[in-house]
Image (cartoon, rainbow, N blue to C red; front, side, top):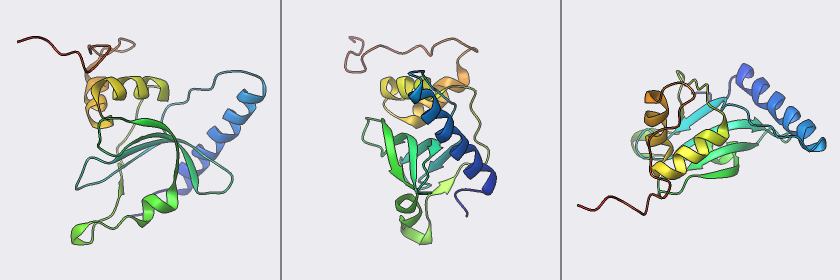
Length: 143
C-alpha cells in the first residue's frame, strides 16, 4: 500500500506551508489531520497534518501504544520501513476523515490514553461538544 498518495502529499505540504506562514505572523494554525496510519497488529497510530520540505518529516500526533500520545515530528521513511509479522506493514486508513483539529485530537487522546480510544470518543461526541472524560486519567472513580 502506498502510504501517501499525491493528493495526500499535496494537502500535507500545503498545511506545512500554511503553518510556516502562520508562525511567521505569530498566528495559530490548527488543521485537521490529513492522514491516519496504523499498525494492523498493534496499537501504533499516527495522525499527520503536515509534510515538511524534505518529503520525509511529518508533523502530527503519534501514539505507540504506551498510553501517552504525543504531538511532534516523525519520519515517513521510518513508518514505511516497519516490518510486522506475517509480511504485514503499517497501513493507511483509507476511510479516515475528521472534522476535528489536531489540538482536539491531542487533548482527547492524552486524556483517553490513546488515539484509538480518542477516535471512538470523538465519533460519538455531539458536534462541537467535548467528549465526556476526566481531566486527569490517573484519577479514576472509587468503587
